[in-house]
Image (cartoon, rainbow, N blue to C red; front, side, top):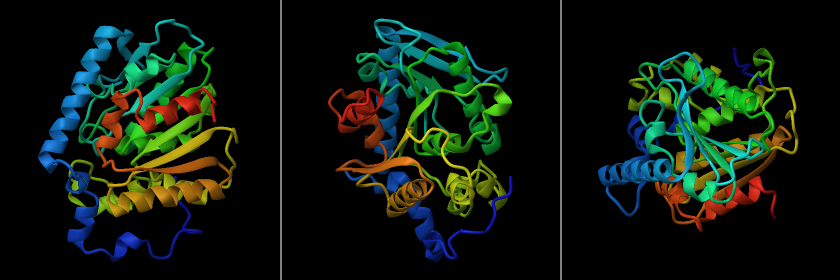
Length: 306
């Protein structure tokens, strides 16, 4: 799908940055505040690995469930104590710049959410260089279709993504469900420290494994797609929460704020939150904590509490 030029900003702020500064802005590990870059990445992976092992050992689950025919097309489902097909489902897409990360180290939120009656799904998709952005978007779409078809009595499907995973979740705002012959019961989106305009990534080293062209970036850019969209939200009550960390880079913060503003102009029920004193990695690994502000925000949204 070609994105019309009409309505797009004449000069995006990132285009005024030097190549070095652009690289710096889109390197999240350079902005951590309490750990070194390598230590932050190592800690993030370790916490995710431990959380996943703990969830698999202590929660009822279905692991490595295929949602498609591809080798990488599978997901894990973790259930609350009282297993019910009518549970709300929170579906998580991991980050890693579309080229790293795994569902097998991403069950951060499982124990706190299942303890409150929410089923949690962690989705695998084919990361680069095996997978292209188009393939990843298609896989995420089909994973949601699978959940809806398997659990048609669900009390709502809530999509949650971190970083690149937030991009993939955001693409679902404009997914064409008609060709899948099912309308998922989407009730909310939690978009955490995401990237919504992919064009700057084309000019950074992060694009090495992706081999993304500007055309690819525009075709898979939720910011541009929403700006060009003429349709209103399917369900105006569906809540889209755009979240960024205080210590995310200025470019990540700008992208989140602009995406939130675009959602509001498009008639979506959107809100914006900048979480105090967390960086790009802490914002997600703290979801292992029951009393973490974002854990509570997610639960309040799912259970429609003020």
